[in-house]
Amino acid sequence: MKMQLRLFERNFPRRHYERRWLSNAGLLRLLLWSAAVLLSLQTLAPGKAVEEGRRTYRLSTPEKPEVVAKLVDIVEAFIAAGEKDDPTARGQYLAPKVFYYGHVRTREQAIKAIISLYRRWPQRKFAPPEAVDLFEIPNRRGVYRVTAVYEYKFENLDEHLSGKSKLTCVLEHDGQGTRITGVDEKLVNESTQYQKN
Image (tube, rainbow, N blue to C red; front, side, top):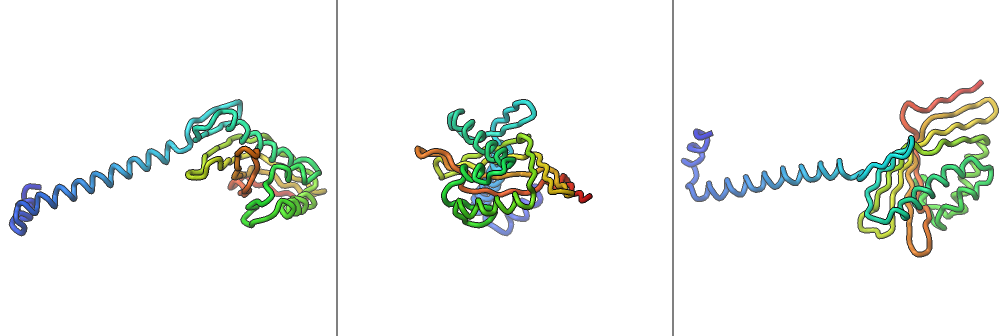
């Protein structure tokens, strides 16, 4: 290391070298420190894990516990309402305008999509969510993202579909109440099983 410094000193006067060394070392330290902070924030982002039976709730919100419970209850009720034959049972949790599976829809348009699903799969069973993650959206007061992983079983005469699904809902909570403003869902890899008798 000293040899490299001597070579460097021959090419540059010492005062320029020291300033440059301090600024580069300081910048490097700052970048490393920033990276360490960001990585620790990423691992801390899920927040406090709360286990209740089989379910795990990871919360990252300073809100009151009753608000958190309300948000989780609405998502669980939205999932459970999928077993009913009435599509408005799910529709009642949706906002008048909702970002529904990648498209901006009115509540009525979303209910039509739910009707299509019910026609395709008239018998549906949903288990309570195994894991629920709740995050407060930064810079959007009263807006939260709730992700729930649950098991499902669909049947239509001789067809059977089962597996796990990861449902993500965006909810707004304010003085007017709590409503779902966004819905998206992805099947959990390698859990899906389809059978036709």
